[in-house]
Image (cartoon, helix red, strand yellow):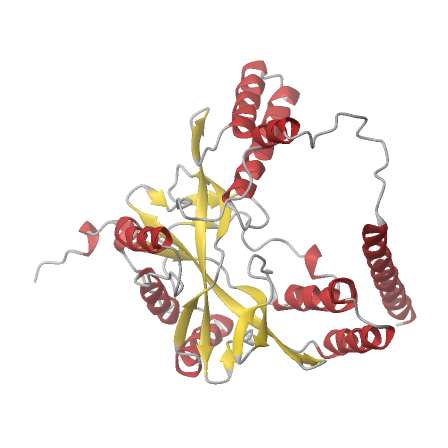
Length: 378
């Protein structure tokens, strides 16, 4: 029989290799078990957007620490990247390079650009779809093999798991991840009741970007509401389970009292729940009749003949480029030119929120001080 494997384009290949080491083997086993315990794959609300650079060696490198919930956020970050490159060129005495990189940054301020080439380098805004596994007990929580090294309240200090990640379909995966990738690339993923354009874009994406690459898992907060599990904040996710716990604890201590107008008694109840979450580092929490769960997110970047998928026309993109937005505010009389160093006058609600955050920062500082004292005594 004649083999055709080497003739198949990389973006249509699903390369599977044996897992190496006990941790990788455990992760592969847990992924296989998840297919049985949480068999249903569901698309999650808003996708995630990154800015990436094409590599000469193949694939696309993600450049930012984290993704954005809207394409314009990633475009703004790419513009900031160009400004940093302009500064580097200026320090190196490369006047032409400084001018070219700054011109690219200014274009990003004025235009909606999802792909651009600067000084021979190709950049693109890249779209990642998000999914969860669902079972009879609810959404899948973090797995024991998921990296979770962050200390309570300090997980945001960890290095990014996506910055520098190379989106390359040629890289092999374990058997379970290979099967998951095959499942996800065939998944249309438009939610029931979604606008017709969103459905059409999803179907078109399956045809134009039939391959895919899995990003490292992310984590979100789910809440049981009216008999169904829903994303507590669909536009956000965290890189580790502890970062998601920290986000939930901050909501319990700060945002819940602020948005729900909690009484002092209820505030104390929510704060105790946050303390329990910090102490036990669990993945489930119940407070005041509400149920929360830290939920594992799968993320897939679709790949086609020319690389990763960019934003879709139907993707939520509420803000225009910064210069366009500024001009719109000026035309509406909502823009005020003035000294950027002039202090901003906060209204009563803003002062209330600031006070809550100040209390939370003071609490975190006290915890850090106690931990440092304990380490010194040891």
